Image (cartoon, rainbow, N blue to C red; front, side, top):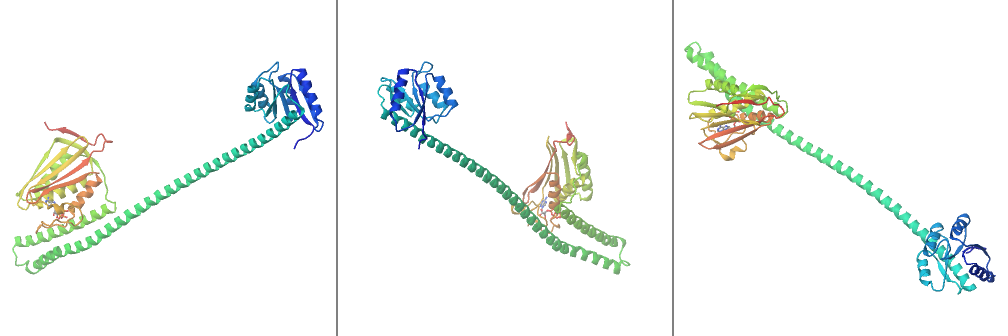
Length: 428
Ligand code: ATP
Ligand code: MG
């Protein structure tokens, strides 16, 4: 579809050629034309900017512009305007190149007749319209593509965020499940411990209570007849048994406190060498001459930052085990080892030893190894040791051989953020 008259801009500096073309057009009386003729390229550009045209007949050798740049610049100024290039006879190569640069057709001057000119003009307009539609649909396609890409990117981002959210949710759930599992394990352990405590305590209490009862009954019936020292022996028996029962109750209470996380850790500065030496002296007074505790320290004095109560608990338990499980007597070696970042307590005896199979369960509450025979005990001491050591963030290890002896080593790290936590003078 063309709107008539078809508006043609003729850009031709050669007046004769321009006249000829106008004559040829005039001969084509079936179509209505309106033609504007300019001679210079700059004139053409300003005319094109001022009013719309349907086609431009463009000479490629104008006084102010020559060659292919004429086509390029025209195309740049009015991209949708069909261009028919006018060339000389021997300039076919340039004409072909002009088509590549955006011209729709070309006419060779001197070989133009009415039919050719009209056909070239119509074809140029049609081709330009087709190209315009093509370009528009390409642009639309491009827009759609971009829109699609944008939407895909948005959806990808949305999915990524949902994925991250889900992963966080999963991690949170896993964490909660883990916490729940741990709480259940702890709960189970606690209830096992409680039922163990009930059965052991009730069992452990029966014997001492019978002892107390029998001594009390004997004293009631025979105190008149008995000599003083026999009466004293029975009073002593009652006192010892009560002491044993009290100890059992305090051990159970201490373990229970530790299990529920209520065992207090109150570190304060203390001289470890003095502390250990005094503890050994105290213990030495309570045991018979069969045993000897040999205390040895790497330093003359050693200031540490520890909980004195807990320290006393674990050292007393380890030392009294060393004595108790050496029924034939012997030496007990107690070494205090000091390094820049830890203190170690090594307690070594020459007693009955511990079978390898029992060593792994030693620190479980109420566990006693298979070779204890008639040596009394409840199996709580090492559980207490472990709890007290753990509160100091330390470790306890055991090495033992049956009938040869046992070595327990407790290692407590020295907190590096407290410069006053370990200061010691080396013995020369
Ligand atoms: P108590 O609660 O009165 O201390 P216990 O001594 O039996 O009773 P633990 O101190 O916990 O309990 O020790 C657990 C077990 O480890 C002991 O029963 C004993 O079999 C073994 N054991 C501990 N120390 C030694 C040691 N030095 N030599 C040999 N066996 C030991
Ligand atoms: Mg013990």
